Amino acid sequence: MQPAAARVAGFLQELVLPIDCAGCGTAGPALCPACRLRLRPEPSVREVGALAVVSALPYAGAVQPVVVAFKNEGRTGLAPPLASALRAAVSAAVAGVDGDGLLLVPMARTRRSAVERGYDPVRLLLRRAGLPRTDALRLVRRPQDQLRLGREERFANLRGGMSARVPLAGRRVLLVDDVVTTGATLTEAARCVAAAGGFVVGAATLASTPLR
Image (cartoon, rainbow, N blue to C red; front, side, top):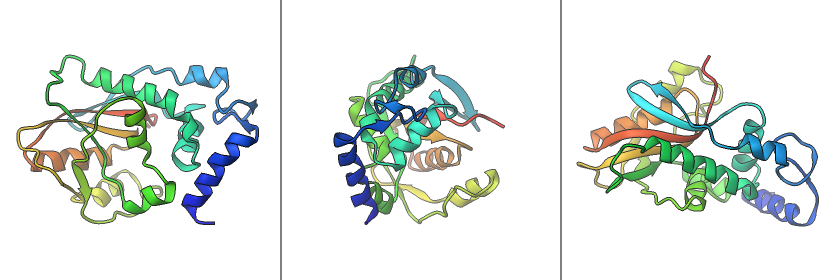
């Protein structure tokens, strides 16, 4: 079965069969009350170079399997609470910033990743959150899989890998992503926006991995 078809099959199965909680695995609803509480946003800020990144949730505990289930297992029914969390991160990131003309810019994605999933996680969450987006970035080359790369390797892997696809001269931009790990993707996106004449006011993400 093709990946996209598998995602659709998983979604249809959720409609007719009982499933476990995505957070803790207990039998019952897709998200038990306790894990739903753990998805209540508590925005925190971390610095990635000169970029302030606001994240709604820590990528740990029950949050991690919920995000993985949403991103990689086709469980789009988990979108509402995750969209609320991302909206809180965006609100915190733009607090005190004049929102007039501000662009919310998600990260560039490969066409293959969208086809395999059948949807783009960040763009789906922005839509569910009622937030407009501007697809201002594109990949100019396909990077290696980041999973097994170290911190410096991730930065090197993504450096120079994006370009602007719309005019950004004089525009203010808030970058948006799902999970920030080393910050390599956001750093490259910020470089790309600056190279196109735009100004990055900050970044908002759904979750942030614990710093080590």
